[in-house]
Image (tube, rainbow, N blue to C red; front, side, top):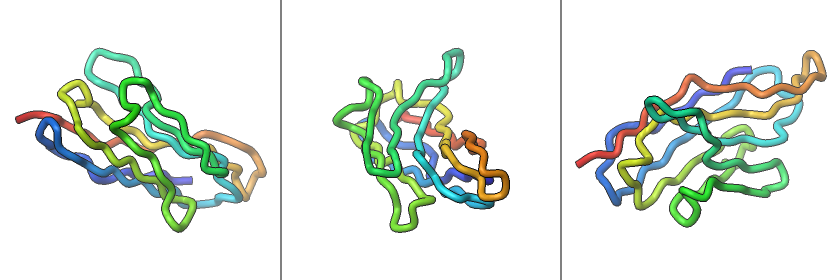
Length: 120
């Protein structure tokens, strides 16, 4: 299973940015997908998560500013970031909670990350 993020870059404070993520490979079912981030010197934290049924949850620090959504093909997920702040600067990682079609085993797969820098 491969997970690939895209869409990171430099954004001005207060501006929008959208991250995209796609999972591919031997996937029987994706139970949930999410976005986490890790700033320099800090631990990785969950930013947002969406289940196969559409249930979402967000970190308190991004509620009301970030929105996670699934694409038309349920192996894609987006993170719409609005009103970004300097403290949103981090590497953003996508994750997929997958049932592997080859092994019937569940696992969490991670992308390599995409850097978001908020600066004027």
